[in-house]
Length: 80
Image (cartoon, rainbow, N blue to C red; front, side):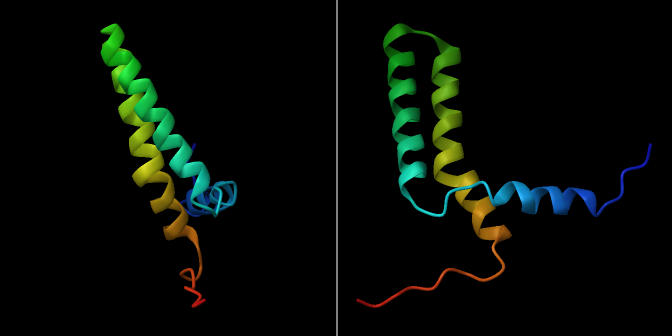
């Protein structure tokens, strides 16, 4: 079965609408990643350390990058 190339970008755009547009959830995900990684170091479980690293990477880089790449216009800075 051949999948058309237009299905993937359409799916990515619809999934990107589920990402939050504020920084709070991303900061919380990074904090949880650090907590998981620290508990993995304390317990000596390598898979828990790896899970913490993945959570930090998702919250600090991958999800915000996906949000910025799928927005039609860049966010505007407001002067207060």
